[in-house]
Image 1 (cartoon, helix red, strand yellow):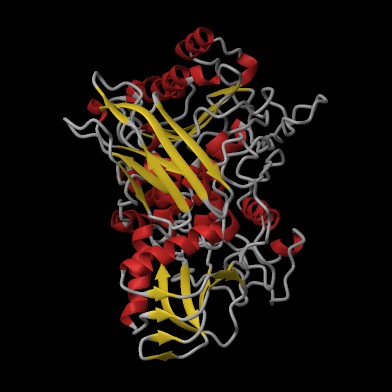
Image 2: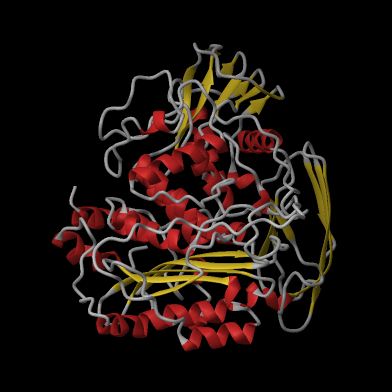
Amino acid sequence: MSVSARLEGSRSIRASIAPALARVITACIALPPVGAALAQAAPSASEPVPVVRAAAPKATGPARPAPLLVPDSVQRALQSAGIPAGAVGLVVQQIGADSPLIAQNATVAMNPASVMKLVTTYTALSTLGPAWRWHTDLLATAPIVNGVLEGDLYIRGSGDPKLVIERVRDWLQTLRTVGVEQIRGDLVFDRSLFEAVEIDPARFDQEPTRPYNVGPDPLLMNFKAVRFQFLPEPGRAQVPVRAEPMLPQVDWSSSVSAAAGPCGDWRADIHAEVQSSGAGAKVRFSGRMPSACGEHSWYLGLLSHPEYDYGLIRSLWTELGGTLTGSWRDSPTPADARVLASAESAALAEIVRDINKFSNNVMARQVFLALSAPLVGNPLVGSSMAGGTVSVSGALGDAGLATSEPPPEPGSVLPRFAGRAASTQRSTQVVRTFLRTRDLDLTELVLENGSGLSRIERISPQSLARLLINAWDSSVMPEFVTSLPIAGVDGTLAGRSGLRGLAGDAHIKTGSLSDVRAIAGYVQDTSGRRFVLAMLVNHANASAATAAQDALIRWVHDRAGLVQAGLGVPASTTPHGSSATHQSTAPAARGRH
């Protein structure tokens, strides 16, 4: 399919997301430090660790001009923030140019925070294909007699990243439609798709109930979050609070009083006392909230995955008029089980859009694990494997990932790992293998979970720039570029006042930890030239780096093309291997979100 057709087709990607999704998943700014800037080990390591650098691309052809200095506006903003040059890695390069226009600490491996999601999502779009979908099944071996399922209901996990409450309700309604009114047995959860690994939600920052700390699961439902809605009303002394979903294992109450005056930080005077054992939880809200604040939501992850799933299904099933007599347990699905209802996910292109625009960590981790999900007996039934695939014949064997299946045909997707559960280790191998097939041997790359919510994940600015250029010249370019936040308009860049006026000209992924600020993406300048940029800041004052990042984006938009032209690179330069059609149709990708 031509790129122009793909661009036109990308208009059909639905822009809707679950209600208040952005507020569930964009809470990573105030996290604790990731350790000393540029450290290459987990923060618990006390001994000094050598700085890792990326391997520089091999030089070919005539000598390349030396990169320019960082623009004055960026340097001034960094100095004002108290951030030294050694804590900043930066690359700006025109698409089609042989070398960067600007480079500083370009090959130093740094913590990219959520910018690492670019690696995960580009790999997924290219190997699974933009049309890939997850299917999560309800199955049974027992008969249905007079509306009664005379046995257990099996729920086979597919690793769906976005099985939200509305879809779970529709899924169970389908079960009612096929004639089931009562389940006379247990809910049996099949979580065998992912390798069983104990995940401590408090490990990252001692905040186990924060939604961004929810771990991946083959049966992730509704991001495992409970939404508490605070609904102040004029004239009422108490602030009504509502919980969704209503889970039988969660006991909660509120004594929050309404306060007069303007709304500042709506949560500043509200105290939440949370006790959670994984199997049950107690939540008590107290304090004051200004009525002027209006409706706000507070999300908490309170239960283990199976407890949450059981509570959600039981609550919705009762709401739909059904009855459930049993409890829950984990077990593989019997081979003779028949499918009663199936929940189909949105296409991967839409999932990636949510991940990159709103920086959803658990969705990214789900997609990362999907890369190594097993093929034999796998409930992942992709609706299409065409498009965005790469030839990897022999590559998996070279990476030590040989399977019992026949070797892939040339041009086929990366094979799934037959008979083995998905794991972060095998997904990391898939990513590295894919990147090598795209001539991206990122030697300094360190992956832990593919989301960037990590102390140890590392990549260099140069490698990010190379990946972005590579993606621009790929068949999944439309889906990848349009998944990034539009500067000053949506996603994690919606509130960036310093980027006003650039709408449609800058698509940038952001990343934030307490001592990390990162950006990477595409900018079109005023003369039509396209640039990639990557800027990683690892420093205790990183939270003050926003002004410097905005200054860089604006400089690239306003000045980079003029400077590049002075170096003799024409505006019409086309990326290596690109067709005229690719270059001429690319502007149509702007603003398609």
